[in-house]
Length: 343
Image (cartoon, rainbow, N blue to C red; front, top):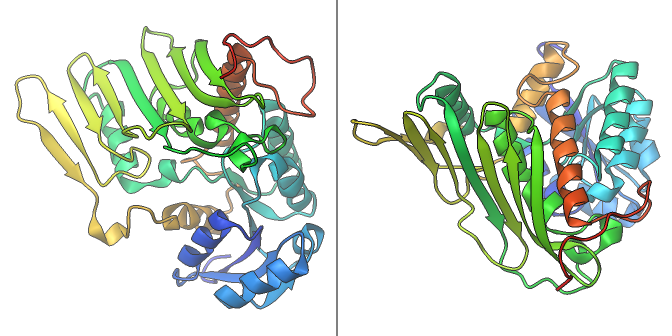
């Protein structure tokens, strides 16, 4: 694939699909050649909006399109297993939105399928591809703050969201944890790895999804990660990592920061700012560029967003849901008992 444009297919036509496609069409080495939706009318409208030559009223047709190098899956996460699975079965490379799936079982099935078919698969965890987040990780890994002792991160939206909203619908994997909490959990794992123990509490809605959740992750070596997510109140959306020799503070929007501050004992605070050449902080281009780099290199997964890491995040999300008693329709096994009284 060296030296030629990477041809993208877009599966779904919602807000995330539009955001990603808008960034794709600005990349000189990317070409969006097809889009699919459950209805042909929706696919055609999206195709006209972005100048995409082919519009399909069905996911299967896109999955079978031999002119598509990689498919971006942007359905609600309750449909990720089905949508991404169709593409992988057909031999298409896939970039799948976060959260990767509803649960770790579905995630493991997709990873096993990709490895069986020897095709590329990556979770669209754009935070891991962000240049400034990568710089932060390098500093932590290189010992800039010593041994990490604790990490705090939060992500909350003000709401309110009515009961009919997607975020309140159990059938669509609703709740704060999977939509928002995946960011703090992934951030903690990026720096600390998979936890050895998980504790959590939540406030549940009448529908049985979490309105807000707090989790405490324990890691081998003694580090603790305190995480929070909410769809009932806007939070600072900030993060802080404290080590034995200093601290890093990431202000509002830790998953797409424009700067962070390194504090070290006996030294002046040091600010690290995003490079304007990297584009707007909300840009999704970096994950697209990583996918295309990996495809040209013949890689079946990205070292920035490794599949084993995605599986570990899903296991942690499952553990948190188990602790707070959230289970979605169709999941195997009996629902866990809630540890809080529903709000």
